[in-house]
Amino acid sequence: GAGVSQTPSNKVTEKGKYVELRCDPISGHTALYWYRQSLGQGPEFLIYFQGTGAADDSGLPNDRFFAVRPEGSVSTLKIQRTERGDSAVYLCASSLESGPDSPLHFGNGTRLTVT
Amino acid sequence: RKEVEQDPGPFNVPEGATVAFNCTYSNSASQSFFWYRQDCRKEPKLLMSVYSSGNEDGRFTAQLNRASQYISLLIRDSKLSDSATYLCVVNPSGTYKYIFGTGTRLKVLA
Image 1 (cartoon, rainbow over the protein chains, first blue to last red):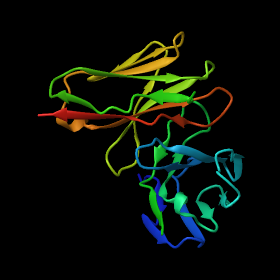
Image 2: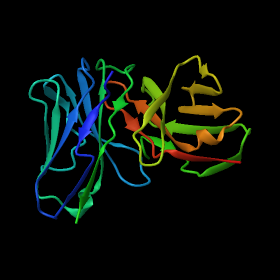
Image 3: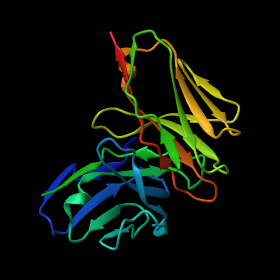
Image 4: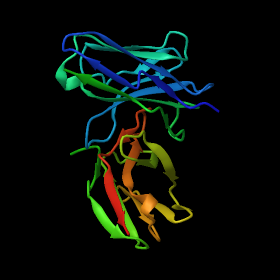
């Protein structure tokens, strides 16, 4: 079946602009995660959704970052007033259940470049 | 101390060699452990879960040592196609976060 889908695959934006990154999880997966990965580093946790609600947003670096999942399926990560330091690959993952034994399935990521 | 630590490598090994990576974690109450594989400019993909009793999948063996708080991955008979970054993932107790290590780069040489 279809995997996790992320759009766009690449996004170049100017410093100070607003961007939205979209994630379409695997059908039926209730848990959805956003991670950010910089070159040479492992994925860094940003936020976790269980259904429509953000169950843990402790990884969001500051209030310029916000994510929603209004119908419990597609999620959008929103970044306001982008900074060059926001440049990274933003990865979305979903899992069948929320729980420690449910591995994550990742999308291909959105490569964000802030110039 | 980082929550999950890995030696970044690179580990350069000849084809057919056996290679092992360790990963240490700081939260002694962590409950779930995984190894993911990530190819260059691709997304991480689940390689295997790590169970308390240790588990094997073909040429790959994963082990958990709770007393010393580390997990290991052993790859036997390395293939060129095993060249990738191997990410250690830990789920701390009481959370749904999955914490990733920085990854260990493996290069298998012909």
